[in-house]
Image (cartoon, rainbow, N blue to C red; front, side, top):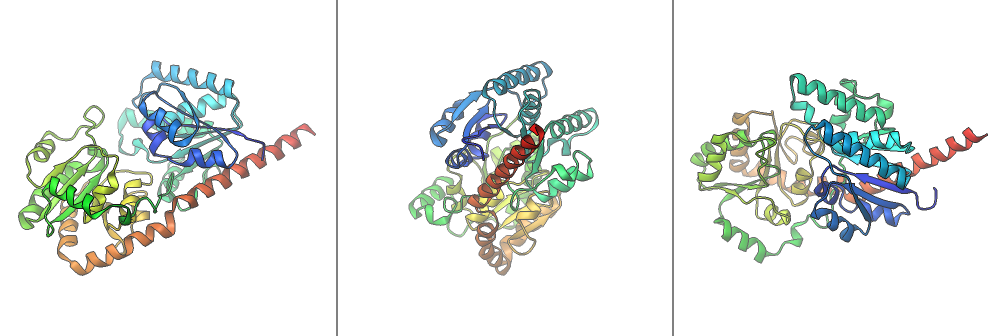
Amino acid sequence: MNINPKLIRITTVPVSLAGLIRGQHRYMTQQGFEVVGVSSSGKAMADVSKAEGVRTEVVEMTRILSPVKDLKSLWQFYKLCRREKPTIVHSHTPKAGIVGMMGAWLARVPIRLHTVAGMPLMEATGAKRKLLDLVEKMTYGFATKVYPNSQGLYDFIVEGNYAKPKKLHVIANGSSNGIDTSFFSLNTVSEETKQQLRQELGIKDNDFLFVFVGRMVGDKGLNELIAAFPTIHEKNPNAHLLLVGNFERELDPLLSQTEEVISNHPNIHAVGFKKNVKDYFAISDALVFPSYREGFPNVVMQAGAMGLPSIVTDINGCNEIIEEGVNGIIIPTKDAEALKEAMIKLMSDKELYTKLKSNSREMIVSRYEQKVVWKALLDEYKRLIDKLIVDNTIARR
């Protein structure tokens, strides 16, 4: 491998650069890469530099379609690539994907990689769907390799003819970053912390606490979850629901009646976004995650590592991390009745609950430990660089 090849990692917003691939920047630096993190401006950019020990560069990008701003982003990233001359550009998230892959192609970056971790187009229709389809195909077209972070996404991409199978590869067993199972462990949260949180929320020892972690939007199944919960509570007064995440009213607002129930129901606790999410897992009894679409959801892995069984929908990623009747329950999407029945079943069937809980952590540790994912990605980088060296040698003969 070349001495200190330069690697650019690009995401649309800095919180993704800091969280989605946390730890990879430092790891790749330790393996001999010069790593540059690229994203929009924000406090998290400084966090990346400090925590990972890498240089960061700002290219402003929006998460919504905005032709003028998007062209400006493309131009800025193209100029950045011309200046930095990276060997690899690796993009995550949809907007950074098209900006990163097209900009790197224009700048003749030899290795252009894009990780797919969920596709917004899955829930789009009409003209918007056609536009998103086009952008997705363009992103894959400009990339030299595409990494769906689940087998389900791989199948969707092939079936939709977004890219040929030879361009696709699932790293390790899936996931963009794996899970740090030494961090996400019940052993790391003290009894004092758990007791304090339970007191703050009014959760008693005999209560059953469901937790949802994620963006508070329609696509995450919040409308169905909140529709189901009041009936669950009526039949099981000790049922509580903890919601950890921010509302995104501009991008994907919840129904007005959903927000009203969240605000007024005494056993629903909306605490907003929390960095110390594992503390909230530690006081909970089960994860409920009725999302419409995912790539390979970190939340489900994190909950499993914390020993929680999960109720998830039958979608990409979720149905790979969770096995029905082994470490969780799988239900159809957009089905409040099925969700309600699964939640009641998990509360009432103690034998089932104990079985699912006992399997949860081990299934994550054995399949998705973070360092396994990092090593698999490193091996992929090395393979592509070695191939590039061979191809260049042949071309010069």
